[in-house]
Length: 544
Image (tube, rainbow, N blue to C red; front, side, top):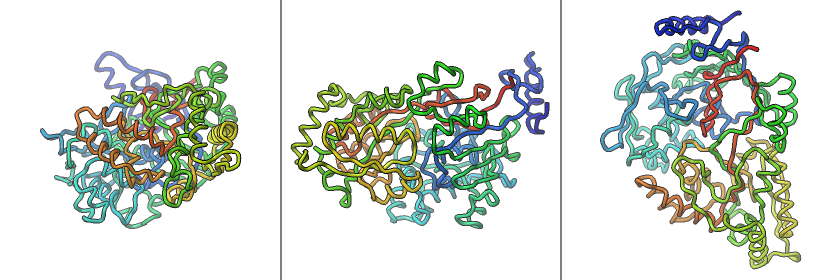
């Protein structure tokens, strides 16, 4: 059996280590579990859409963030259970008032070109993330982290150099907050605050993420990137913990059709893909070792365009409520998806850490009661058989999104006489269209950036970059501010959810599970990490 030099080193080191405690595994086994490893360690997975950007400070999608966790490494990582573990930072601490965090960086972390990773790299990247000239779609996230002067920088009142971060020395990174934030450390796991190599960015500009240019500090380096087709990333020999990495190569294929992807999975061309909608129960019985439904911190919803340029009917809360009430969420979750998803009547998933069920009023009604109220509200708003409500529903190309849109527009038509036209676009195009406000109603979803309710609720802040509905409510803004410094933010979160249910700027449809087909030989997947933050360096394949 052939292994790379680094894997041999890892196995040898593990062998020496376990011999000291009286247990040893052969060199061709996993150094911790003792499982026999497959000779080929190549992970092949399907992507629904191409990656809009591989620049950590320009990313805004879940798939991009997954790529970033392979190509780059931030201060902290997560383990298989979602707990924080060291990344570039070996340890971290807060002062007595919890408004200054200090991260002590490991001195053996290197960039893929051999340069050391230092605190100055983090200062550069964090300042870059709020630079108005870059226009990061996630700049708001740095403000949400309560970092000193972030708000003023984003408002154009201060220079990015005034952001509350500094390199105390080459390996000590300090962050100053405007107020204590108990979950601050967990927010550093997101790609927006990953380091980037300043000399490379400045030398190549927008082209710095091309494979021939990229310098990164993660466990893998980018070898190929063919837009809308494929990517390849391979192990980074400069990574500080490369000796413990087993998967040598990660390949992705863009396949828009989930059924085509499943066929290729069955043919052995993919190691992971999504379960085609409506097939989970059958596949769970036929292939129980491969069919997974995992906890996942995400909400799926439709957003109204309530801006001045949006449809006039959507400015009427009666219309928004009517459309929401008429959706039978149980049909979507149980008949179409069938993967353990939960009907949603509020924005924040109930599985979110510390979150208390807000018990929105319409959640307690029967579907018949919701339907009756929907008809009443729409009629009161002046719509009916002689004046049907008409609008377009935008969603990104996906068989599952199509099935959901088809079912929901049929419900609206049959129950309310509404004429909604489903329209699909490629993911990147839909993002740009929605961000520019060129839609009536749009499908969207939010996967938690960290495990706390504010990651979902802050999306509805007035003027927020992800507030596609253009919703504005002064009470919600005030409650969000109060929650950040409260010892118990749940009363504020409950009130926010109740306001959102009363105003209905978005229509919650279901809360996610991660429904996957996985090669049973692939091990190390974080089954209990509710954020499903996975790292290829933790994966491995076992032999027959």
